[in-house]
Length: 225
Ligand SMILES: *Cc1c(COP(=O)(O)O)cnc(C)c1O
Image (cartoon, rainbow, N blue to C red; front, side, top):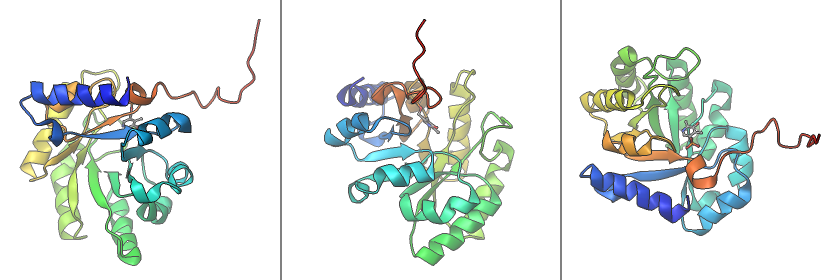
């Protein structure tokens, strides 16, 4: 889809859910995308981008840094926190006490406030990051009380092979009972459903830029019969 088509699809989904189109932000997920595709969306005036790796994001965005809002949507290792705090405006994948501690200390040290989302592992998948739903309330309270961090919202990434609606509903419920108003949920395949369940930002990559080139194949020799 073109940038305009994606914006229109988001607006339409918002209206269908009796919500205002302006209440749903688009995070353009530029990770691993060839730069010419990203440049097109930048040229169309879009300014909010999502990346999943700290080094890759730093390399790609240093030149454009002043004009964009960068959001980290991939897992953050403790040893990359300093670089992440320096680079990103928003970190959406806060998910363990140790990370919260290191983030609090690093923001203090750099004198920089990064907006934070807590990732909830709504499907309780062992290979995935995120706080288990049962621990969410205590985790959020700890972020606020002990580390005095401003938590902006919650984020989730539903299991790939399940209908996402129940996961979006669960995230919305956890947010509501903790007084959080921002929900980062919904990707290329399910953003309309996410908007119906209250998403305030949707993270769209492939539908906007095209499929990401397979990193295993990029640069590999082309084998012909
Ligand atoms: C890659 C990614 C997306 C975008 O997925 P698409 O299917 O390309 O829209 C969204 N959120 C997270 C956390 C991702 O890693």
